[in-house]
Image 1: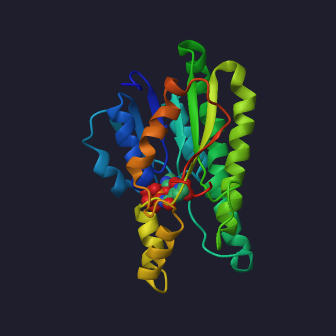
Image 2: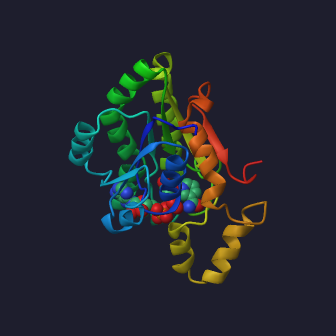
Length: 248
Ligand code: NAD
C-alpha cells in the first residue's frame, strides 16, 4: 500500500484517466479527494472506500481557493484536467486558444498556487509531497497533425512542471509531468465518434501507436501511483512518457 496515510487530490476525476487514477490511488491506500466539474459523473465514485468527491471547476479561481481553505494540506496533487482542440493554427480562433490555455495550463497554475503551501507543510512534516501534472506525448515531446493548441499548451505544462520542481526541490516537494500516448477514454471515443469517418478515425488513432493498440487507463495508473508515492522520491522535474513507444 504505497499511498497509505496520504491525502491526494485529483482534478477531472469524473471519468477517463482521472477516474481510474482515483480508484488506483484509493486501492493503494490513499484518501482521495476526487474532483470534477460534472457532479453527475462523480456519483460513480460516491460509494468507493477511500474516496471523497467534490465538484470543482478548475477554471474557477474562487472555487479552487475555497477548496484549499476546506482541505488545506495534501500529500499529493494530480492536475489531470485538460481538453483537446482539434485543428491547425489556421482553425484556431482567439477564443479557442484562450480556452485551451486556461483549462490546460492556467488551471494548473491556480491549483498549485492554492495547494503548494499545504503540500509544503506536508513535505516538511512527512519528508515528501508530490505534484503530478497531465501533459501528453503531443507536447514538446512530439508534434501531431491538428494539435496546435493542444501541443503548445501541453508543452507549457512541461515547462511549468520543471519550474515548480526547481523552486521546491530543496523542500522535498516534487513535481513531474505525465506524457501518455493515445488512451481509450470517453474523450477519445468522443473524438472518434465526431470524425467524418469514425471507423477510419479509430484505425488512424491505433495506427499511430507502434504497439498496434490504444493504451488503456490501466496502462497508466501504475505510473501515476508511482509518481505520487514515495517510491519515486528521487524523481522530480521529469516528463514521464507512457506512450507505447510512440516517441522512440
Ligand atoms: P475525459 O473526457 O475522458 O475526462 C475528462 C474529465 O474532465 C471529465 O470528467 C470532465 O467532466 C472533466 N472536466 C472537463 N472540464 C473540466 C473543468 N473545467 N474542471 C474540472 N474538470 C473538468 O478525458 P481523458 O481522455 O481522461 O483526459 C484526461 C487528461 O489526460 C486530459 O488532460 C488530457 O489532455 C490528458 N491526455 C489524454 C490522452 C488520451 O488519449 N485520452 C492522452 C494524453 C493526455
